[in-house]
Image (tube, rainbow, N blue to C red; front, top):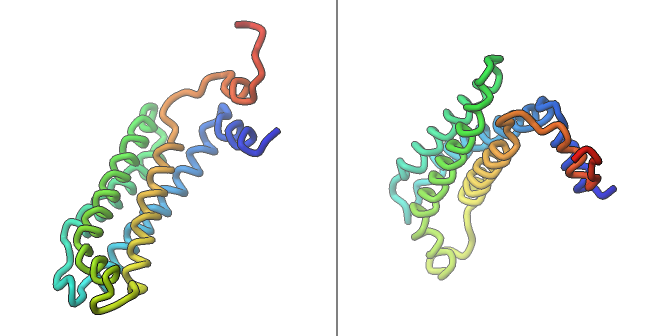
Length: 170
């Protein structure tokens, strides 16, 4: 049995708890990286090429972190239909953090162009690289958490379908 089939059958089990735990951990990591990106951008974002911080990059990442935290907390509430709100919350958190990343890249366009043309510098600063990395990790983890979030009952024979075996009662 290949590794991919084992992974698919692991996540396709009838108990959503494994997927919920993994999705919650990914969501929590995405929130931490969003907060780290905002803090790092606030500390190192002002340069000679960017005299002020982009408020959109900070605000949208903060909104995404709050929505991710809301999705994490709603997932912990043991109400009957609370799991239905988790997936949309995580997807919207992904979209807002992704938009914050786009705002960040737009605000740093002159700096990026300066480095590529090598006018005043020929390398990126560590603050820029880590801020970029934290934004990418944040929206990537939030997207993965949204994809793994449990959104409804799993089919009874989903593990059989994934493994390639055909049941005889069809």
